[in-house]
Length: 510
Image: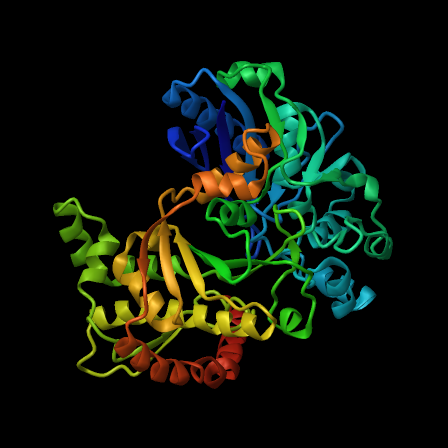
């Protein structure tokens, strides 16, 4: 029996058909549209996402030539909210995770319940990213939408409803909403009563890899599979990707480095201590029974290198195009072999964890008349890894010792960047044979639900393998440790300055 894993990201969707050993038989990809109606708002049309997903599923099935696809599961972006009516139709565009309009609601619920108490109940620190704050915003600002809502869905339950007609959400996604009691494993009566939201507005929560139903005949016909195909509950894209990378035991972490960079890891008991709270690290359910999950976030990772490419590297981009080479590879090849003589703070859109300072901004220190644009490119690369090291050390203080990284995403294509990560963090760094970790993770959930694998551990053992490994160079590690100690001083030195600068710019409307 073959398996389909579908990944519904924020900016793209992908479907892959795998055989039971994890070999890719067919795949398809499509970009998704995001709209930004106002500052701090980010929306998406769920119907367009659904039809795009149907296209990629159909194309992946056709490319695979498989006549034996027996089960499907999904990996989805986190924290989006979609109000649905009783017919399962969206009543407004989805409010995406990156939509921060609900700052006021996040402050209100923290004041109502207490920020630390809320974290102890839900494992989530109050933040406008979280789904519940968005639901509160809809209730307060769009009462007609709220009154007509049958379910407030994430993309997880939206897709399960569309695929098989059942409103169900997996534990990983439910526990990301800030409305789920982590210890009771159910919708929190305490939290929902405080904000006067009826638990009936949420879908039934089930473990990942639960068989939810069979695919609806009209959907089966549209994508070219049998109406006997089983649909299994999937999970949040970070937990799916972690499963697809074999992150199912402690002391390992997945480094997913694309537009943003996410360092995610798992642990065997809920961690709700002060270091987790102060570091803005969530605590929620992993897909592996009995395991929990968290991640660190740098949301301006690859996008800063894109900024550099567009603003400073027109020559390299043209040279790469002429050589039919990736522009980033060409840029990296021009950087100094050792540490850059300048240092960058990469907070171009505020900082990620562990400070989550929305006022912080980017900066370059140490410029001189001998500084080249190649020095700046290397400083960008180094800054991303310094941010990673700060998070790894902070996570260690919370009880999460990480010694080995498995890397996916665009930066995982660069051996220079992977070696740099090993040299600065002191961790071993490895790439994976199958780098489409989120789709593979969804497929492993599906395959386990269908009985192809007895356990998720068995599924990982059969399908997940390492490709290349990188180890710290002691000489470079010593140099970078000295520089890292200096880097630690950069954000605190500029924290107050940036806050005042941003507030002046906002005052003047720029």
